[in-house]
Image (tube, rainbow, N blue to C red):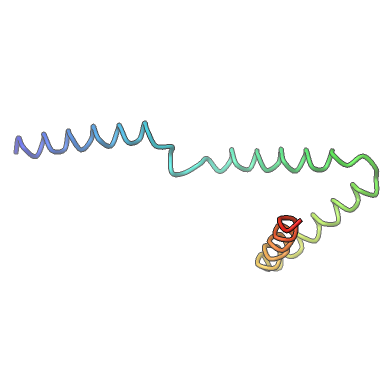
Length: 89
């Protein structure tokens, strides 16, 4: 029994050290959502004229519409294509 306790103690110590060294595997969802809102806000307010802001709103509406219809894959493909096109240039 005593060796089991020592084994569990050592295991606990190793786990604590690993937890201190490695970042947590789960990031707080609310923190990420706040970052996304911050990114969207910065993007929206980067546009200075109403036409640009209107285009932003229409794109957001299109994305929301597709997601609400269960078409996340089409949003993902569009984002991916745009990202790949920009990498080429």
